[in-house]
Image (cartoon, rainbow, N blue to C red; front, side, top):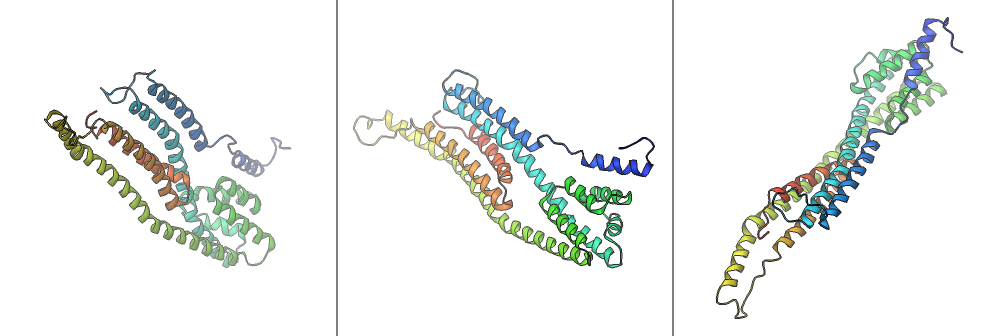
Length: 322
């Protein structure tokens, strides 16, 4: 049991271990964002249902009649609230993990080099901690401080793994711990792990570069679809409406020759709006899965596409005959 008269070094070790072990046990920011976004989405979808049955008269586009379009607006806002926060936070967390793991092979290689000069694993870690490893630097320095104050290297590695809970870190710590317990030349093991880790990262980067072409094609196809709709709204359909109105007022109206029914043009654009929403969500998720293999990355792309497509369709494109 700790006593006030314990040596300063012992109290320092206990303080370090206590501070490092005190990890938050609550929900992560991503899960909280998902829950909060779900609540906001449920509220907005409820408003959309009331808009559709004309119980709520609030519209986002001034002068627009009540009905399906305002209801779709609130449905889209609900989707953005549900997908956006979680997608961006989860993607940011994945990028941070990638930046941390990117410098891990450098640290392992430095520890291996120090070990080849006859240093033990704890001494090699302390020496290598003087380097600069990006986001890993502060965590490696904490681990070195713990070792200097008497914490066993296995415990320090375990605490390092808890502070940096990435898949690659957990795998590396497990290998290094077992190699240190088994004895032998740990430096060779560290060098092989560093080489294998770097090769895996290079392969992953090569795959992402290859997939970036397909992600670009998805974005281009989506925006080409939006431009096509805009051209139809600005040029093609207005001319059809004028032609239909001209025929309706001409002497051919009752002769049973040809008629152009332009009353369904607003319904056609409602179908286009729904198609843009479906394409934005589906194409965005596909882009993220292709690039990073993660649905969270796809939710980020889906949020961007959905927001841009909805804004263009509702506030840039003018619906003829509406």
